[in-house]
Image 1 (cartoon, rainbow, N blue to C red):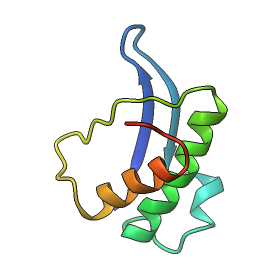
Image 2 (cartoon, rainbow, N blue to C red):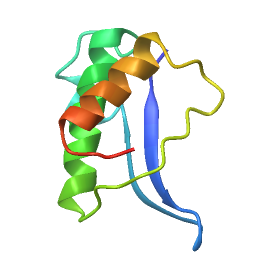
Image 3 (cartoon, rainbow, N blue to C red):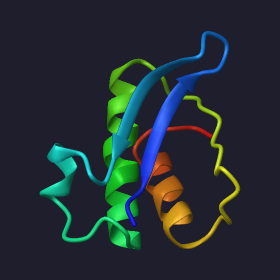
Image 4 (cartoon, one colour):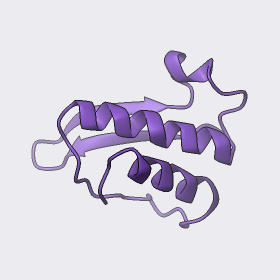
Length: 85
């Protein structure tokens, strides 16, 4: 099971940035897209892309998933790389 994430402008309804563990640039850096290590790598890469676009403060919507395991690993890595939830 792979993870995906998006930065969305809720006002305009536009997706500003998106990334998945299935993305070509990321898929070759991870062995399997459904574990904590892959989630952390996704968080790192996503945060870098978002900060590069000029955003730092974001709302984190877990889409109903519990805050543990892969979701926590993603969030922790994103925070370490510049995102503020």
